[in-house]
Every structure is written in structure tokens, then in C-alpha cells.
Image (spheres, rainbow, N blue to C red):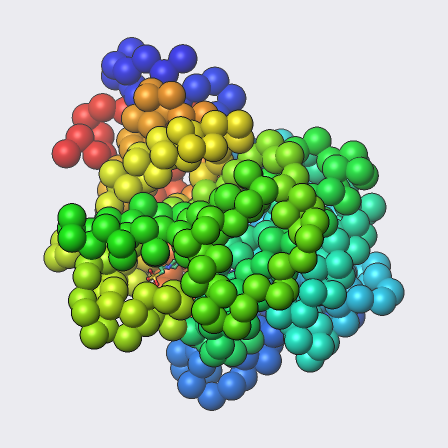
Length: 462
Ligand code: GBH
């Protein structure tokens, strides 16, 4: 029941899953320990100029050694779910070939500890840390990598499958393909539209192969997590809106959930390297029954029509399109704060893809947090989270099948090309000492979880 007002509370449905999320390379550290192989992020972060101040994930939050303390922290916040990612190079150091049992041991310990604290583990099998040895064979532009991904997924399931209910294959294939191989701002730093489209297809193929393998092995729930966003612009920008929506959203939603690529996306891909990499039967593999669609939402994309504008390297085919948010409040990433975008996104998804359950697998914000008297006051983050939860509640009330919400992130961490400069955590990390300090937002979130809802007259009555 989602009745408003009862007890001064905006209640979420019974069993709504409250949690937090992280990713392996962003928090684990221990980059050379227990047989872990190198990933494309180990290499990329060492290329001068690619990551702010030359930061790397070598140590990060040292979570590999401090996971027990971090699980206790989660339990103290009342989290029901913890989304983490499994590092492929820990499990198979060169991507294929023999399994490294010591790498799996870590996730084994983590999962047991989570369960001992009544926290449901939500592993994601790929959050961008491709084994470097596979990149040396072409990375995601190579079809073979999709098959290696399914092999690796099976190896993880063999070890953890008796304790995991919900498996997620990929995190944000758009980012992996179009920032990794298109704009090159992420690892492996390639800059080719053709490579990006090939990578996107092979990521989707890897998703389908892994989902099918996990299902055959007995997985109860399978999910795919996408970075999705409403694309917004003025009336005369309708073609620009459709193009960006196709590349960002439908390019992944339609193959995974309907078994077909959108025509407009195929047309752009055909002009950027061709379609030879898409083989007969691929779409049947890619479309696997999914219980959940994971949604990472940060902000809408704002576009306008701007004749003469060159294409955005992350969006091949967008000549004449300008990407420019209107003035308004932003986070420390300069990303617009737009909770209404989450509501409209959830409603659109439940309308267009009614058969799949929805889970917000990431939502959150970076702000310039500072420690004062041993505490971190982050009212902007509380306001951000509160407003987005209100939007999620409104979407549920309007019929969206939203099952849960995982805040990004549990901990301040390695924010990819921005290094440690951008803090997304609800828990502050002092990287010099590895001391964790729950921010005010964490304490606020604990209250939200405790009452399964938002209260009136506190934050967000604005
Ligand atoms: C997530 O990516 C990641 O999963 C997570 O690892 C990361 O730490 C977190 O977000 C915070 O960054 O229209 O060109 O401006 C989010 C990736 C970033 C993808 C913003 C879409 C805007 C594309 N998103 N991006 S553009």
C-alpha cells in the first residue's frame, strides 16, 4: 500500500528494497593481490591526462581488506540490499583460462558476511573492469569477448549461486561502449564510432549469453542495468531528441526486452562502420527473459537543434545537435538536478516495457563535502535523495512496478576520470586514513528505511 499521509508518512510498498551500490574498481583497491589480473582501468588510469591528478584504483577505499567494517556500517544503516560488482580480473586474471579461486574467495566472504547481517547481495558481473588481456585481443569490439563473459559469469555462479537470488549481468553498456570506445574518456580510451557500435552489440550479446547461462544454472532473478534518461528539448528539436533517445535508451532497451534494434539506431550504425557485426540469431540470444530492469538515473539529457554543430563523440550521428542543460541547480559534477525526470522515466518504462519489474540500481549526487568537528553535513544530498524518492513514490502511485531503490553510493570512491575528487557517498571516506564517517544523508537514509517511507515536515517539504 502506498497511501499518502497516514501517520504523516509517504509510505513505500511492503517489501520495497532499500539499499546502496558500489563497484569493484571504485572501492576495492588491492589491485595486485591474491592473483588479480590487470584490467583496462589499471592501464587507462596510468595514461597521463586520462584521470584527474593521475589517481588510480590501486588502493581506493581499501574495501578488499575492510569489507567487514563496511558490512557492519551497512547493517547499522539498516540496508536490506547491497549492490556490488565482481571484478572479472580477480576471477579470471587473463579473462579466459583458469579460474583464480583466491579471487572468488573474496566475494564468498563478502556474500556470507552480508547474509549474516540480513543484507541481500546484488552482484553485478561487469562494471567496466575488462581484463586487459582481453582488450589486447580487441576488447568489446571482438565478438569472442561476449562468449568469455558468459564463461566468467558461469564461474561466478558456480561459486556463489547457492546464496544469490538476483544477478545483474552488465552495468551501463552505453557507457562501456560509447565512453570507452567512442569518446575515449573512459577505459580503454579508444575513439572510434564504429568501435563503439560494435562494442555495444557485443556487450548486449554478452548479456544475452550470460543471462541464458545463469538461467540454465538456476538463477532465480536476472537483471540488466542501463543508464537511462529522458531526453528533453524544445519543440523544434524533435529529430535531435529522437536521435539521442535512440542511442542512449532504445539501443539497449529494445534488443534486450523486445529482441530488435530500433531502425533509427541501425541507420546511424550503418553509416559508422556498418552492421556486419550483427549476425543472424544474435537478437534471439540478446532477448532473454528478465525479471528486473536496473535503472541508473542521474539527470535528463537536454538537447537543442544547432545546425553546424559537430557530432558529440559519445553520440555518433548527432551532427547539428547541441547538448546543453538549461540554467538551474546542479551537483558538483555540474549535472542538473531534475527529480521529475525520474518519475517520467519510470512511467515511460512501465508503459513501453510493461513485462519487466523496475529497480533503481543507482541514483545519487556528488557535492563538495567537508568534515567539521568529525561530522559531515550534506543537506544538498539529503534534498536530492528526498526529492528523487518523492518522484519514485509518485511513479509507483501512478502504477510503475518499482521494486526498490539503491543509492549511489555507499562510500565516496574512485569516480572514474574524476579520480577521488568527486564524492558520491552517503558515507565519507578520508582516503588518507581510510576512516569512514556516515554523512548526515546516511543518518537520514537510515530513518527513511526504518519507516519504509518519507515523513512530512522534515526534509523535502519544499
Ligand atoms: C554511473 O555512471 C556509474 O555506474 C558509476 O560507476 C558512477 O560512479 C556514477 O554513475 C557516478 O558518475 O549526455 O553525454 O552528458 C553514470 C554515467 C554519466 C552516463 C552522465 C550519462 C551523461 C551523458 N552517466 N552521462 S551526456
